[in-house]
Amino acid sequence: MGMERKISPAALADEAPDEALLVAFANGDGRAGRDLLARLAPMLFGYATRVLGERSEAEDVVQETMMRLWKIAPDWRQGEAKVSTWAYRVAANLCTDRLRRRKTRAASPIDAVAEPEADLMSAVEVMTEKDRAEALATALHALPERQRQAVVLRHLEGFSNPEIARIMDIGVEAVESLTARGKRGLKAALSGRKEELGYGDD
Amino acid sequence: MTRDQRDDAALEALFDAGRDGPAVTDDFMARLAADMENALPQPDLPTPVKPPRRNWLAGVFAASGLSGAALAGVWIGFAMPQTLEFTTETEAGFELSYLLPGADLGSVFDE
Image 1 (cartoon, one colour):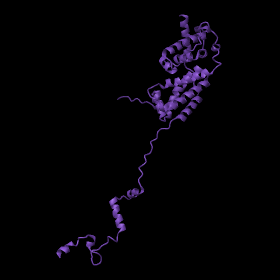
Image 2 (cartoon, chains in turn cyan, blue):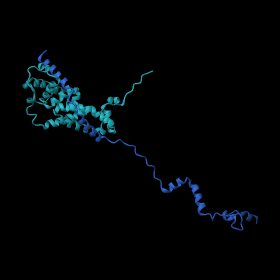
Image 3 (cartoon, one colour):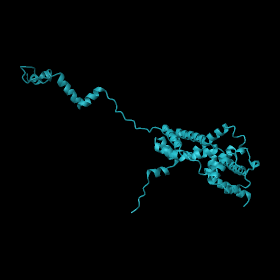
Image 4 (cartoon, one colour):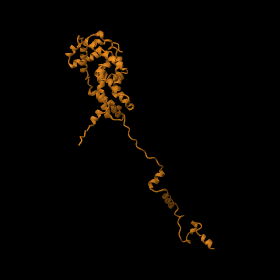
């Protein structure tokens, strides 16, 4: 006698691809919309907060991104793009727009970096998890905008370089360059080596 | 371990700490859910199929359950009872030849 495996509707919703949920939403399924929202909103919020450094602005970006997603849902062309990649791309553009509107912050990003440390590892070893997260957030904001976006997508959101290329609408080589320079910049900022921080964006 | 390797390891430790990210508030999620509900497309409901409109006279015929021929019979019976009334008593009314010309031809040949 074979064992019957029962799958709850909630488990099925967990397994459904983002695209299936979006199509179901477009057909009037509010539950699919809520499931998709629960998946995407926290990720987008984490990304936008890291890039923008402010929760309220990050919330605005996520809200606008989700509204755009709901709006295009009926016209979504299946199989052409991943829903999450599309959403990150919209969020990335909205973040870029907001960062470019900020004039004061761009003046001297290095001023925001924490106390310089001669040896980064020695400093990190004595930090709590919370302190580490805060130090990283502060150092990220010392980076030029595009480097910051690429580093966040690669090292915090876990996207591959080709995925980041699609999100940022650039080539894979440009992504590699941005993330490499971004990491160098982070190390320099955290170590207080201001002279190594490059402010050129691309 | 070189300085660069130590820096890389330190950076990885910072990335690990920063990966969890800030959490969304319930209030914010509720706002997003309300946006989603407002944007939710209405499902396509099947439109009821209207029966073809027939003219009223056809409806009367159909309602009566009578075929055309039967209805004609009813009409004739109702409208011309006098015309169709006849009797076999020729002296009291009319002969069969009134209704069927030629019925009395036999008498002509007999002459």
